[in-house]
Length: 123
Image (cartoon, rainbow, N blue to C red; front, side, top):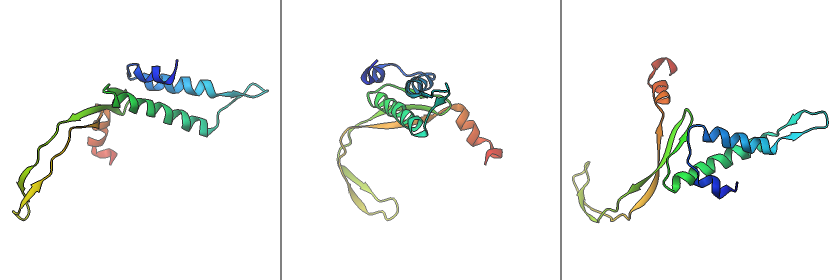
């Protein structure tokens, strides 16, 4: 399965673990004694590659769920016309520039992460 085929697949909570496992297993070296050798650089490269695939999938408009952490999704921001406004601190009239439509990444945390941060004993 090529890299681009993997980008088109739907991401679920177990996708990250499965893809990371597949990448690491493919790069494990077995010594003559039969022990597995896995350098840190290989693990780092595999994690970066899987997260890059997740970002590419989200950039194409698909929701990417990462276990425990949350979900990454693309948000379409509409265009804004130019106009006039007021500076809320000084009351001075200002010109507001036009903004073209864009697509931005948005992150939503999982309920478990939100509860961890809400619990004061974790501070």
